[in-house]
Length: 94
Image (tube, rainbow, N blue to C red; front, top):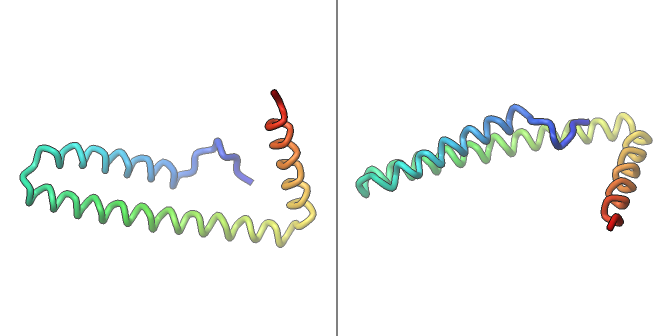
């Protein structure tokens, strides 16, 4: 089971695409209206591609978790209980 602090390759790709889109939006501000519309269409297509890639990645991760739970139900329950206790301890600290 992967930690939330570990970077997934898809996360790095998503960050790179976001940076690319941000740079593209900066460039759009200095373009003519028609060129800006074309850049916006490109940015929209890029965003749609990122959303689809993210959906695929999340779907694969979900399937992996479901398989893990089916194969190891007791271990899954113990992990969930341990995570709940840990969260409870962290939230109860003042």
